Amino acid sequence: MAETLTMLAMFILPGMVGGLVRGLVGIRKHILKNKEAFDISKFLFTIIIASVVGGVAATMSGGDWRISLLAGYAGSDLIESIYKTRLLGLFKVF
Image 1: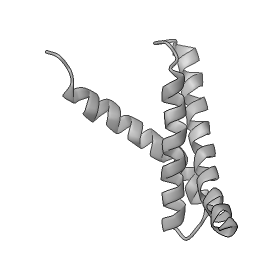
Image 2: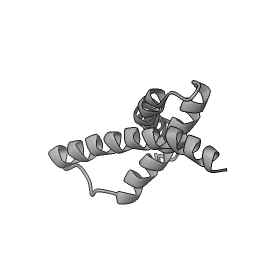
Image 3: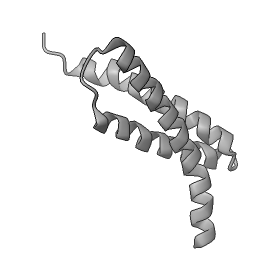
Image 4: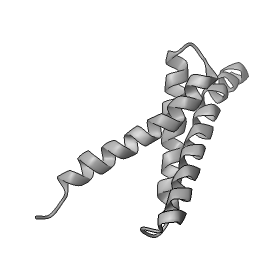
């Protein structure tokens, strides 16, 4: 059991770090543009999604932590872009 948890942490933590880096880049952009109020729940959701995406990607790639890190960064960015373009477009009031 401890071995499984260690292996899982090796997959999830790099994805979480990738998501954290992505989130920090977003915070920097937010500070520079100051478009809207900062939403901490969105930031935390990004990190959680990045952890899951990174863990899945690392598992599929044979346990490479670098893939997890990259997937955590890029995966959360991809999911956020899909959310903004597709899901929010469904609920626009004309």
